[in-house]
Each structure stands twice: as C-alpha cells, then as structure tokens.
Length: 247
Length: 247
Figure 1 (cartoon, rainbow over the protein chains, first blue to last red):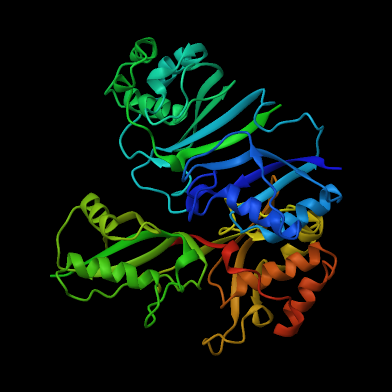
Figure 2 (figure 1 turned 135 degrees about the vertical axis):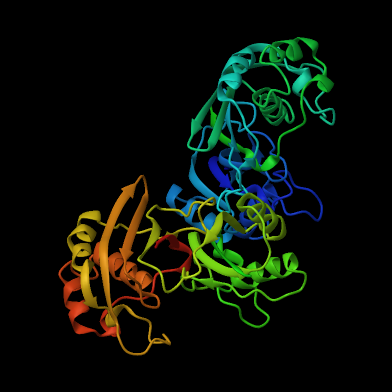
C-alpha cells in the first residue's frame, strides 16, 4: 500500500533551470526525482509541487508530495534524501500526509519575498539572492502604491505574456508590504495564488514608482487597465524567493 | 608624481585560491592587479594587503594600497575598478592616502568573524559562508572557555605547522566573544594580529568544548602547552570572514 509523503524543500535557484523537469537541464524536480529513484531502486517516483519556480528563483519553503511503498521514519526520510541531494537543495521537513493531501490543489495561500538591495555597490555575499538597484528609491512612494495591490483583482497587467495559463487572471492578494532593513527593501506578498511572473512585474513597477519614473497612483490605474504594456519590466529572478506555502 | 591609494575590498572567497597571487590560480590579488593593469594601460601595479586570506576565506573589509600616477576622483576610482572586477570582488571604499600609509605595516588591529550554523541541516543560502555543525553545541561551555583567549599569549598551540612565520608567536587578542543569533553562533575575534589559521583552530577547539569532547578549562591548558597537537582540528575556511582592519 502506498503512503503519501509531504516535504518542505529549500533550494538555491542560482544554478537551476527552474523547478520543473526539462530535457538536458538541471532542475530541482529532476534532482529530487533522481534522489527518490535511488531510494526506490530505480523506480520512477513522480513528485508534485505547490507550483513551479523559474530559473534563478529561490525557495525557502517549497512544498512537494509523492507516493511511496517504502516505510521509513520522518528522520530517516530527511537524512536519506539529503544525503543523495546536491548541496543546493535541502529537505527541511518531511512527514507522512493524508492520502487526500495534494501539494498543488490543497494550497490555501502562498507567500513570496522579494529582496532589493538599494546600495551604491552590489554585496558580494548577497549577489545571487537580491536584485541590486544602485539609484535612489523612495520607500514612502512604495508605501503609497503598494496597498492598491491588496484585495481581489484581475492581475492581467502583471502577468507575463508567455504564460500558459488561459482564462481567469483574478487572484486575491491578502497582504502586500515593503519593509526597509538596512540597505535592503524586503517585499512580502501573501495571496491565494500568483500568475506567471506576477511578483516580479509588481516589484519592477514598484521600483519605477520609487524612482519617480512612475507615480504612486499609477499602480491602481495599471491594475484596472489589464494591460501588460503599462506595467514595468519584470524584476530579476535572483531577488525572488518562495517563502512559505500554507495548507 | 605617484599618489598612494587605500581601498577597502569585499570578496566572496568561495571560488578563489586565496588572496595572494599564485601561478595558474584564480586569486583576489590577481583579479585586483588585472583590473589595475587595464586602467594603467598594461603597466603592472602591485598591491599590498593587510594580510593574506586562505582559499575559501571571505572578506568584508580587507584593506589594500597601491601607488599610481593616474589622477581620478574617489568615486571614479571605485566605479572604474568595479566595472573591471569580477562579481565576487567589490571595492566598497577607496580614497587617497598619506604616502606613509601601508596596508600591512600600519595595521592597528584586525577583526575576524567566524560563523557556525548549528542546525540539523545545512542552509542552502548560507552554505558557502558558514561551518555547519549538526550536533548539539552548548553556548555556556563556549562562554566559559573563550575568555581565556583574551590577552597577550604565545599562540603556538593555535598556529598551523605549515606557517612560514618563524619566531615570535606572541599575539594580543583584545576581544574574543561568541553570540547566538537564531541557529547561528557568531564568533568575533579582535586583535593586534593573528597567526596562520589561528582563528580557525581556536574555533575548532571551541566547537569540541561546546560538544563536550573537551572541557572549558582545557582552553587555558592548551594555550600554555604551546602544543598544536593538543588543540582541535582547523575549522572550515568557509566560516571565516576578515571583517575589519583598523589603522
């Protein structure tokens, strides 16, 4: 009889071509399935994740599930997988789950963080984990604009044209905040779900507002327009981190 | 007429074979001198640093000096060098210095930090910048032992046998402290100077004390013995960072 297992996974996205398996590319899903295959003596174990992440995007709390016939304690599952995984992917939590738990369909809310280093020079220790902006950003302009994002909206203006998702672009953002920590601007977005590149386009637009290339009032206008061309360009993948998935 | 220039340099030591130039190796000094050579149209400019750092060791505040006939403002020096340097080395401060300033001989004190991640699993985002210890470390045992390091001592027991330094192994440590920040133990050592691998051997010994393989009282005994064999093994290079050099 198979048992469903839920795991929380952390990865440094720098050297990955994203989460999802692709031919001849190093992916997080590929590495996880390779490790599971070794534990299952060559059998292919397919994992399901809460969602994909793009090349260069990081995760502290990605959640996956898989089904297995192997019986092991939680501690042994963690140890066995981490021993087989490369050092840029770690299982940080793993446990048996109900058979109706689904890493993607059972999601209640997701939280992303986006890190902008606003300093004259890049920080060598953070360079893979931030988007570096050397010019002046005004936090109060961000604060004026960011509240417009909260609530239920059609986020078409903040969705990459290359999305495969057809139809409904309505999502609910429960919370959109920006905090200054030394020379870092930390954006936190919590919502029911997010469109393709949505957080990165939102941050790109907030950066233009902070730098006075756009006005704080433009945020609500761009949302209403549903026009991707009115929003700013997609901010760098390196600043984005899938922080937490709640079920 | 030449002008002496002082610069503060930050680097991620992960992909460097240490600071000092070596044949066919990627070194911090090599990269800095390459950038300076480009600015000086092929002329070799030799830099002097406050001291070397080993392969894998990082710096937030390494200090160097060099002499040049080129006249540029401080802002332009920083911009020109950073444009030519690889992304794991950054000039964070640069300014004209007195002609008798010397990055090595004028040092008043140096500060190193050493980061120990004491958690069940490695953190993918910190893996190049910490030494990971998965087993239990007792902070109060470290606190009992660490004060013995402060003061003027012959640190022969905490000096790598492969040091080129002959003679005097007496150094003064002004401050040796350990703070817990979440699951990180942050060691800070401030002193007049440090022997080869001294901080890493001190931390290796403190880890053994924290894990009850050695007793807190052993620290003073090992110091007095001047015997490298009584101290513990050298802790990983990745945890060490040259934090600050004062003149």
